Length: 108
Image (cartoon, rainbow, N blue to C red):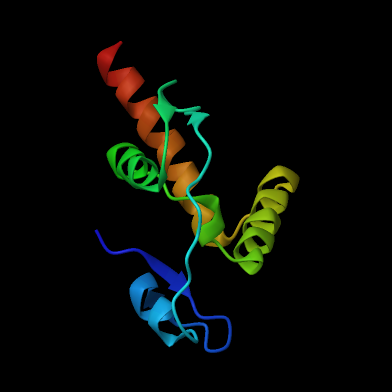
């Protein structure tokens, strides 16, 4: 599964390997410290095991998201809590409620 990141200048999504090649030279990093997974409670040690763990559970490391992404999601959550929904979201929610009521009446 390819991993992607957003280019800060162009905003395009590029594969992480291509982004690393554009940098000036290679980067050598130390291994990550062991930690207990909050997902399943196993001990994860090393970058390879961390990548496998993320792939197994279908999660992405938080470091792969930009600060702009977090700001956008925070605004979306704020709008949800204050009741500011788009017309499409309101229509979908009403349809969902209608479907639930219809199923309950047919099964009851």
